[in-house]
Image (cartoon, rainbow, N blue to C red; front, side):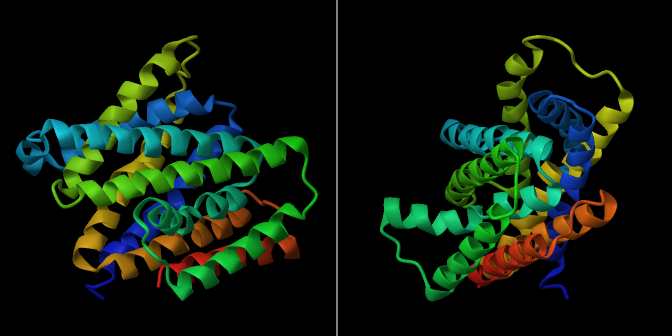
Length: 280
């Protein structure tokens, strides 16, 4: 049980956080402003969470800071903002599995940039994921829904770049350091565009919901994932993380009463199976 505790906690955290974001997107809040508010609310929570290790967090070299800034730009800024835009147009039970194909894109970039060859499990997983996406896109969708699917897939591309960079910086930066600076740089990048035209939502319930969702999504979820990689290994952590979209999809269908057609269920199941197999 000790071998899977951190991967399991990461899976649950990543699985439930999108439900809070969907609630906010259903209220009509602009995605960029929601992303910014989330980061503002989560930063003090995570600083409190790491109160006994702050000295190590703020003792970081310039080279590492530059990589952490890029991780924040590709991940929580671009990836999550596109994820939020996707939630505006399609069900969370669709956004979650589509955006999670980042785990399949990583070996693609590894092959292109580092000539690292992939395994048969990744190839098999890719076929299942492609089949699942084919089933999903064969459903009748409006133009806005198709836009949501595109946003979800674009978020996966940016997530894959962020995770590649996290692999580079993990040997020299702790999980606490990576988590805190991802949030700090997110605030720095998102503040200008979020304040550009005002209209910041003042409803405290919006800020509270984003704080809770962000605490699980960009806070402890990331910490659990990084701890999982350190203590349980990449394979186990990857398998559990890849299963998180299934949790999101099931809860999205139950809580938000999202459509549950056979083609949609089959597509989500194929993508989930492909993600898990490709992580083995």
